[in-house]
Length: 112
Image (cartoon, rainbow, N blue to C red; front, side, top):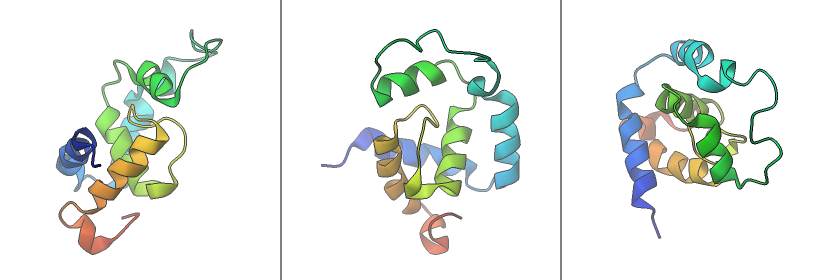
């Protein structure tokens, strides 16, 4: 069954499709909460968290979640690992399928 929430996330990334990858990288590295907020162990390091809970905690309040997710889908595609764009790996893989079908991405193919 298709998760319409994840389809909606893929659609919401359309506004970023023309942003060059190097610009997305710069934005995520400079403004991504995970790049500067956690200089050591995060406060939840001792807790047993699911991937979804970890993604939600680590990305809570991040101003560039969409940019981060767009960047990961472009560069890693279905091989995505870790926490990117406030989504766990399994959800990013499903979003990736829908993301590829959006507009010119379908013509360019994966990792473009």
